[in-house]
Image 1 (tube, rainbow, N blue to C red):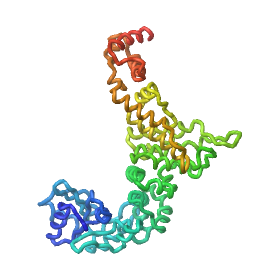
Image 2: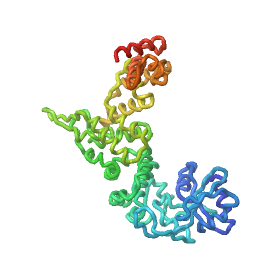
Image 3: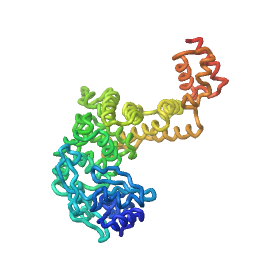
Length: 443
């Protein structure tokens, strides 16, 4: 039934030969029961970290990654296994870390302190060890806390987000008391570092069940992205939209590929609509200028999530430009390929297509403009066009030789690039050099 990596088993064997009970635990056991190959291995052992090191260091590379919490990473032929001493429950004053680490010799005590039943199973020489019904919950497609849900989330507030992510990742439902406790304990996320929230949140956005979970738990999403709070339940009062702003945004997210920046942009793309809402004389809602306000809010949210600069810029650009509606003509496509770059150009088309498809349960057949623009762009790119200053047949040295200086150099080169990228000029040095001289006369 179980096909474990032989390297992980050798680490267990080494610990057992030293007189300790050693088992595989957590996600690798869960994944094996689901018929999936485990990618990360965790083990638990009835020995403190000093004895783990003593048993393993002569045979394997040992990294003291978390000695204070009883963890040693043991590496065997390139496979890292996080080996942690059996621990038992304690107090968590900061809602993240135990006040003190207490070891135990009993595996069941160690499993009892874990977050969800599907993660509280172990495998050892005697087979599967499942004191809390994790295998049954896997079969039923349920995420359930081990023991009292409120206590689990109050021990480690990141479990609030991890529970949603796990349900979305496995496309499982959350058991009723667990779901209610997530809602009650969502404010505890304020105790968690934004870097940890970012990692779990972006993983959640890219999971197969993300759309369902985000719709079921808007209060948790808005704890992380408060900019979306006004969007929840906001009636657009527009014949083109049957969903409120938040629901529309989540449904758009579910229609783009699972890539973090693209999915985050889809979630945030209409965040500025409530602030820009107006009604015309016929009672129809409009959102003039919402792209700019949405981009401002997206920039704010991306900074709070501690996204790297490149990802922040990508998200904000997609949000700001999502209403662009790029015309399927060679000149326009070339211009936007040059301004955005190919990757962002195709992302924008995908977001625009998803935006249109998320307006109603059965949207009208997709207009072929996005598909035509995409096909046209790929044909243009196959011709290896000039889209960047680096590819331009003239450069800064040529501009300086022509007598230009300072900011005039950049202005002249960018003017030429715009014309070359649009197809108005060939990327030919003999054609472009005289135009630099013309720019000097105009300056």
